[in-house]
Image 1 (cartoon, rainbow, N blue to C red):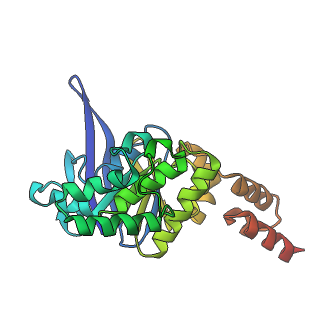
Image 2 (cartoon, rainbow, N blue to C red):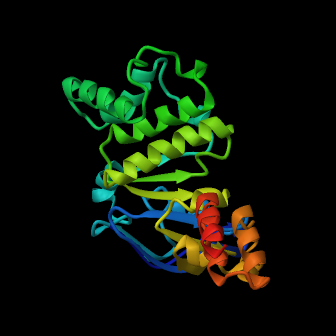
Image 3 (cartoon, rainbow, N blue to C red):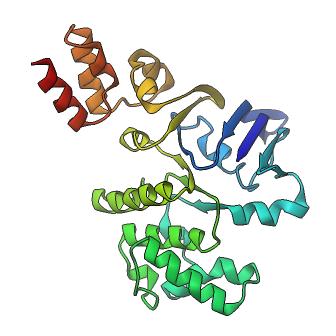
Length: 275
């Protein structure tokens, strides 16, 4: 669905060009869940903004379903196919009610009122907020606001959704709500690209893409990424606690399989088998 070929994007400081992403080539298939991870300043958000043409590469090219983001004639279509959810849900609210907020995108796309109404109802049902059409979005909890933001993206009926640190400002309950919605959407076939600092969220993804100083340094399954403890330290990532325990047990000679454990349930099951 997404093809990035030798993409470089730099920001200028005086006469200097500082690359935020540097010569990145990457393919994301339809229906995949991709986690984009890396330390602060690694280029994650810059990369995400290239996926629907919010930023254009200085060199290289980005295509979405064969359409180039550099082609202004197809940019509107690309942005209908790729929804975005940002870090702070308060920054995304544009309506005085939930239904107004969700209708904003479809109205600007020229969709007829009856179809907009259908999409509002359908998207709210998908995020578990049916019946909230008239509520004031500013009075919702953080998790509910982010679910409204997701509903707004879904109302455009995209093929993919990009989430840029979309759970970082939520409390644990709000984060749990949003992740549950994303799992359901992924099961329905939606392509998900999630930029995150939370390594526990990475375990939900099919692939983890690791950036360091603007360069792509790894692209593999989360299980393979988390098994590389020493490399993670070099990448500036925090290893999930369950993987730290598994790595220590594996180093201690208990079982090499423990280094690739992804959840507490898997850990308990394997330890019981070993006994």
